[in-house]
Length: 390
Image 1: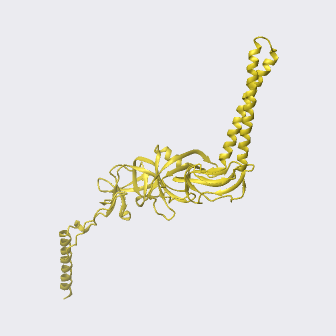
Image 2: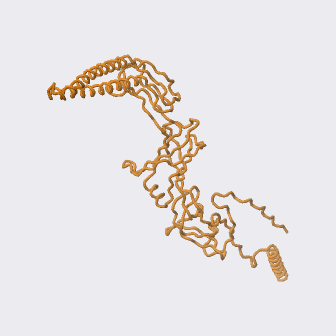
Image 3: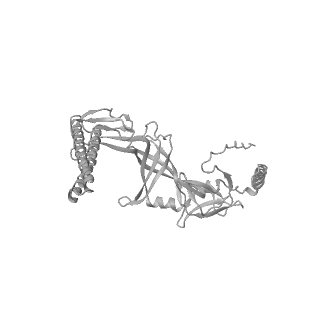
């Protein structure tokens, strides 16, 4: 009785296995129950022109800054501007007591009048001497003395005129004017103070705030890398981020690049220029710069997630034209956001595996599913079909 039962059970098992194989074949599965090739996400490589960008920290400074100083000695009488306000070039900022300077100017004019009178007398003597020398009514020595006196008197007049001009200039310095247009700072000396004694006294400072300078620096290695690529531009763009992280609406341009390395820091000084029409930027503020210093041609952007490393080198896995996974050794040059920039190791059209790396085995087949290239939006994914249940 037991033998027929065993035969019946074995037959039922074989029948069920055959039914499952037929169902799998009808569903499109591989024959014989083999696993399908794993699906991996790939990015197709295409050479492109890649901007060379650096994130740097810089400090704002005024486009022009002028110290307003007392250029003549005297007592400061009045301040004629509002501290922290915008002033125009030539606007009166301070007045110094002009009385001593007016007296000096009057004295210089008196000396000029005296010199002119002496010159008139000397000219008259010289004219008489010229009329008498022909008839030899005066000696040659007297004639020479009269001519020399005339010339000396004319030189004295010129010196007196220069003294008057200097006195007028000093009198004009008693009215202190703005040397440039900009924002006038805090008053450094109060009214009633004696200024200009010995050396010019600082009264205030005027800063031109539109445009503004951004002073920053780069290491010698970074600057050499940019220049080695042959991509440095004189009009490199600079994007400014305010201290709160807000992008500043006006882009800047590279204005100056130094050629002297600071021995203390090993860095090279650079400067950018940015418009400041609304006065948002203030001197002394630290800001973040996103500087585009040039362009690198025929470069490949490889997502950092695709790069693997071992004891030999960095490498990526690609899906070849035969549908199999292959390894390609690369040399990463520099990071650009979430990608590596490189020129060697990959070629145009290579399908670099970005996702599903744990399922990709070199030499084994894989199914490539395109992913968005670096800097592109992901495509709309189609709805996956729902397998029929039977």
